[in-house]
Length: 130
Image (cartoon, rainbow, N blue to C red; front, side, top):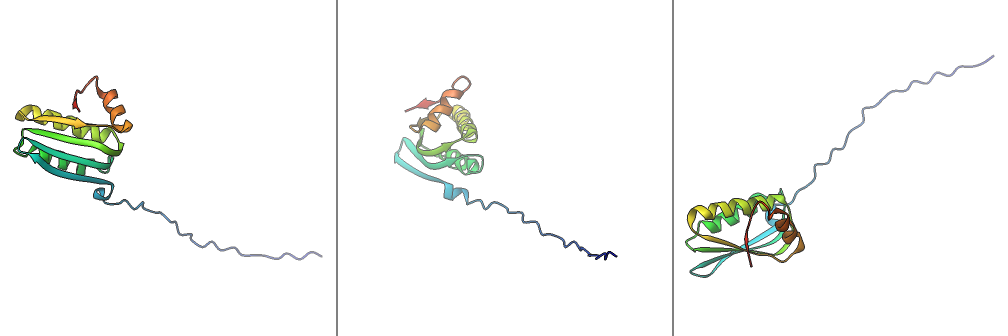
């Protein structure tokens, strides 16, 4: 004679862990310093990462410089660690903006990530690079 043992299995709902990535403040990943070394130049020194997440912070800084009374705006990108297409869009917008105001825009480059993207885009946009 065989004995059948019945086991009841009850399903308990499992909790799904959905982690939302914690993004730091764009100001933590991108530092901007704006100075006016002379009456004719406004310097916007940028350090850190320019990507889709920090592009608006970068844009506000650059466009803010273009609103100054100085006839020349220099954007120093020599301390950039990452430079994406979103940063190139900001620079293109700034270049078009200065064309309407009579001011000049000059870039200081250096990091390969900046130079490479500007080289790739040189067919469609031209920048004054120091």
